[in-house]
Length: 354
Length: 265
Image 1 (tube, each protein chain N blue to C red):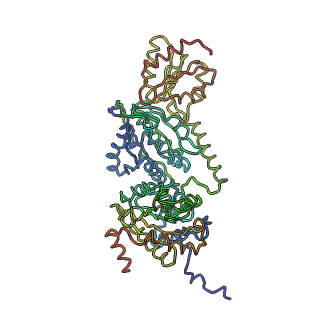
Image 2 (cartoon, rainbow over the protein chains, first blue to last red; image 1 turned 180 degrees about the vertical axis):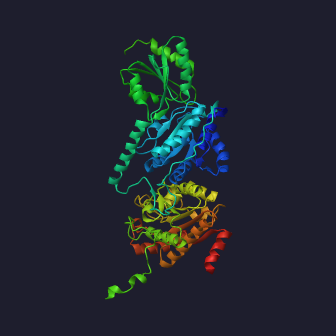
Image 3 (cartoon, each protein chain N blue to C red; image 1 turned 30 degrees about the horizontal axis):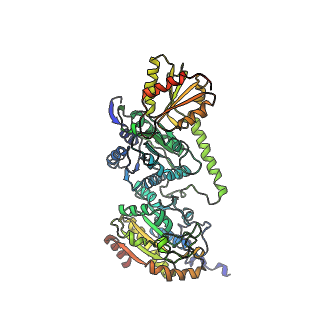
């Protein structure tokens, strides 16, 4: 199973869904993720799975809600404007504790923006995004292999916690092609005795996020937050590169972390001790690991494809007595390694203290 | 002595098995309770309680899944047809129906019901039209009549400002997807009986796999119409029936054949 196949990021997501046993996909075309929908339109029906191109992202997310309630592994994929439209439905799923996977191949924004890759939906995705108190697990792939692997992991975590999980990718990752290893398919899906399958030989099942009496609702929200605490305890994921002697730490996730890897190599070649800290879950965010790093490193350079969103979490983790700087691009254009290298040099040339 | 009479053998009006003994939150004189009962009776008579799924919506019917003794779930405002679409496609043996009001189906959820109909999804929609927003306290609905008072058209609905009421059955019957579309009412006992027949035919349409079935039910809302319950029934007959004529709007041949079977039986 180590033979490699050349695959585009979007196709790897679609194939990851197939491998994870996704039983129902609903989606509405939006660039730069159309290949997921197109690919699944061919793959799903032949396999006895449900595929439906919907009239809108509103319909798509509510069909995902219905399929998830019916006990199926369900997914939709979209890009930023569509992700905004889906927030209400995602909030309902979080409230009703329904497992589902939402792929957001982020593009430039706000508004219509453009179809280039971006990371401007970070706050929206990591803080809940819709109305009310809730959180979503967010997995942030940085390669085509991870597009497949994290999609599969997303289904697993969604079922484990009965919570929606977001695969937070971007347009560059969606379009790029890389050789990847195809994973073995998931063969056993978990039992879902709570699902809507017909009240045959059991009491009826009800799925909702509503209590007529306001006093009955806080206990439900409390249960959600106990679940999120468990997620923060068990599911934090990150990757480190050259951090043992680094005095400057780049923090980056997703496609831009690839530029950061190159920047680390370039800096090291020039004798600058730089490392990379890459969260692969941006919720739960690896605060503890980053706080730990701040004991040894004084400079944190945040590289992101947004106006300055990831940097807030980095500041929360390292505190205000550390230097935290931002190197970024936004609105749908990439950030190159030489730009990150220039930012590294500028940061270390500044005297310590402010 | 009389307590020993076989009263329980002669009860003609049982609580249907599919209807829970659950406190109703509906107002006195509301038509929703009648419609709920009709659905429960039909589900019992068709023997589908273990396959039925109530896809509730937002509005006065928000608690529907608590009133029925079969699986049920909430759906976001207007999106019940999307939820039912997924449930039916994932589990074709289930018998999902959406229970939606006029604001839910004909305002915020217009796109979802139109496209479910256009796709010819094989589920059933019970659409309760009382020409007003009930749960939020009596604002104008998409089906509010011209000249009708609501808390957001206090001078009466005037088309230049608030547009015209939507005739849902007429609009949806223009599509190729639906198999059965009818409008009935619950303002008097004979109408209730006809409404039940239509609801039953709608479910039978789904059971036969013939495609989308929708029954609009005109229903009184005495509290928000600011009328006594009996006056509300009369008002419905006088004002709603001319705007929303009762009858069948779409009956494909296969459904007509189903209906004939019943007539002969």
